[in-house]
Length: 468
Image (tube, rainbow, N blue to C red):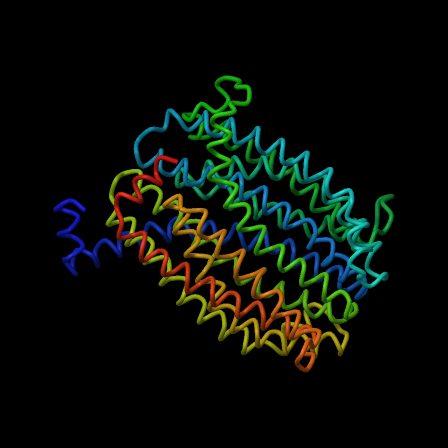
């Protein structure tokens, strides 16, 4: 650490001033991101509510189908997310002329990943039958995924362009596009779920059709933003570039751990949902309500974590490591404050929330119990999400992967299965799975917070990561 930086670190007044400045910068980035994430999550909530009004089987089918689609989509979007720290560090280092080349290669990655996952999702019915989920939900799940997978290619292209804008600290376009997408989603759901204008009623399958159409809209809108706004100075479409193996491998080395971390976390949820499918459609429906509520509140710390990636990355690129550390601390404290407030709100509204999703008394009763667990879950889930975003700004992407893999798959899943199905203990059903998840999140949050404290004090390690 150089002398001016050491002086700032040792001066409480200067440190507080930097923290206030970073909080302002973080807020300016995070607020549009929060709206973006809530709008994206709102589409999933709309699917759950509107499919649930058709039948419990439709709600369960949408839940099971989504738990096959979203892990793959999140994995590929995580790989493409290597764009955010790459662009933010280049932006901080004033090397914007190199950004266009990075995005061209990211778009090639998005195209390859989109085609591969589209083909892979064609085998979802065999997997559902193999797991042995309730047969009543399988036709809806297969039809939902069959429609939704055609949105994979455009949504990955959208993410590459969105991460370009966010890496350049411009988060408004994604917010506007997501809001318009949500406004389109609800009437499209009504049309394809219930039919009309010559279109047959599709039930829960219609949710997949409407989502795919919205994903195509998002790509077209983001292409327009990048082509006709201040992003033109990046020169993304100034020339054509064939795949560059060296640059694509660099993005993959950085992005694969990000995507794998997101996949590991989402896949354990999907695996748990599939296992809960053995308990019947009512258990799956209650689980889906709890997941929707947890996912909705999670969008805010997720946005804070993404904003933290940008701020930490920008400061690392500018070689201001003291400010990078302060940016990380500010983001983590903000997430903790939000988590406590969200937990209190869920507890207060736990009896009213399930009524939005279902009129089935059995589903509602189980969902109320799960929402108590969701309130506890918030504290640790929100913390780990932001710490991962902070570490991503340093380009430390492998440690979160290893910690998540061990905590979720080697600990949370087996513990949850033992408690849920009663292996050696009284069976707790769906509640047992959520208890296992909470215990896994405690491990992730504590270990990764310790990693941030360790890494942020080692300047040379940070600089070596920046060369990735």
